[in-house]
Image (cartoon, rainbow, N blue to C red; front, top):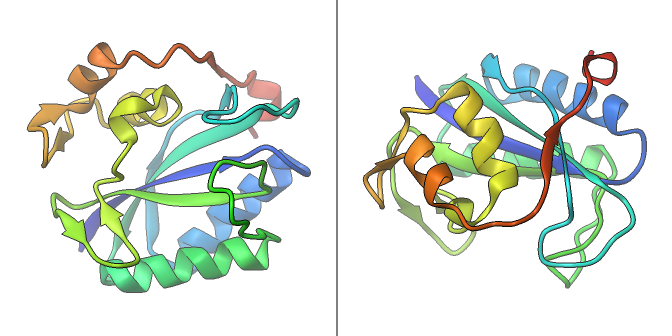
Length: 166
């Protein structure tokens, strides 16, 4: 079994419902959820939007290959209403990013793992640090806590209050 870290993100629709459904489908189709961070409200990264994002990191134990995981997560995005646009940075109902696939370094036409910009993004590092602060990034050979300490991302990342995080 491989330990997989996935980042959920979205800023459109009923975020509580979409995240709940995404977690359920990941648990059914990708592998067993073994840990999850709190949900965080975050400002859009790389573009302007009035709609605040939610982000959450999920730890999954999976027997699937990285390519199978990618296909399954893209299918879940599509089932939940994700429409992929030409512009990479845009509002979306759900985004499911593979942050880490074990300690593997993967570069294919469709997938780069570890996620190539994780070290630049507090919205990924803060929830990941909550559940895996000592996880070592296999490219930089630094812990998630070290990467977070070095991150210069100025955008606000705040925990969603517990009443919304059920």
